[in-house]
Image (cartoon, rainbow, N blue to C red; front, side, top):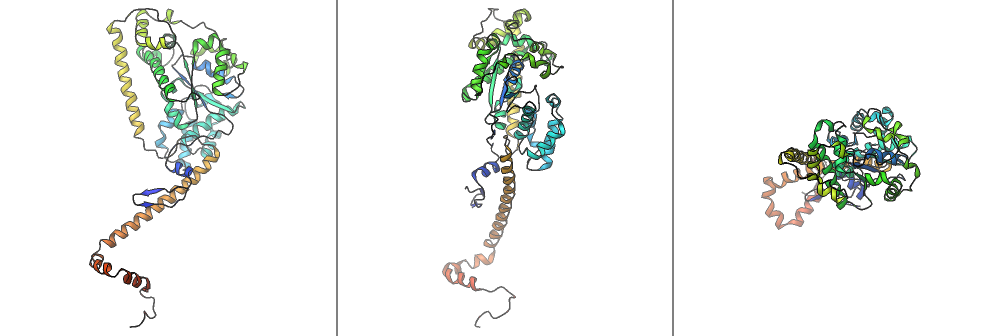
Length: 428
């Protein structure tokens, strides 16, 4: 048992266990996966093979990876608007935002059912997201669940707040091939060449930090070129990392593409074909000479780190690099602003995914939070009354008398009868 301090000089009673105190303090909970295993998140630069890898994993008899969706990060970043999810109306607002997401329809889940379940079970934003993704895995009778989105390369810290036991799989592809391929994919076709180059360098740099900071059983890298050249070998290694048995079905992701890749994502046409190395090195025919020079100047060290050979395109002209560095500085400022904004969000409630049993615990903690607030209010009221008495003139005038006869005054106060009680007050 612990004591929860409600202010300087005053300690509230030991009402709750350490787990309750953790919830009351708003710190993250640890997910109890109930046999489902750790959640899996696939990330990387756009056009690096995240969709191919997600299909391979979805072919595993225990793992379900949904089509790319975009509600996880908005739910977290907008958590302040929902407030305390111990309040049913707040859970309903969260549920409505989730099921009305543009990408929710690709999951094949019933919006009303998910809404009801979030209202009944999701007491944190992580629980709401986890509930949706588990419901998707339940569609296929699978225990293990995960998610895929290239942009998760920027949100590992965010995902770990919601899912502290998550595992991350970072797929890496030759940056020049990624940049060349992004030319025909929205929104990168409109964002420009510099944005495409920075997306790859950002993915590598953030991946390097994750590799240094996270345990070996939490972060794993796999290279696209090696995966398509020898899928059995590298999928076996991946399964070891995930603590899952390897399954040969993972070698045929194209069997799922027609069903699991939305038709409007026409840029994923190769996922409907057998795994091959055809697209490896395609940048040689798709990048203009000046683009190749900029790529190798900016990416050079990172490319060599992963064993990619440079073509020797030569150094770019200063004006060819100017646009990239201007864009990179602008984006760096944007990232810093977003981090500062998130640090200023006032959200004292837990965000991590909880099991149903933990949700019940959170419900109890919510009631205890109200009781703690009530006790704190009573303390403040008593403190005001005490201050008023000790600052009164009569208290100050009787100070010498109290100092001289402390025992006599204490005894007299104990024996004094209330006014209007009647009866004798003793000998006159």
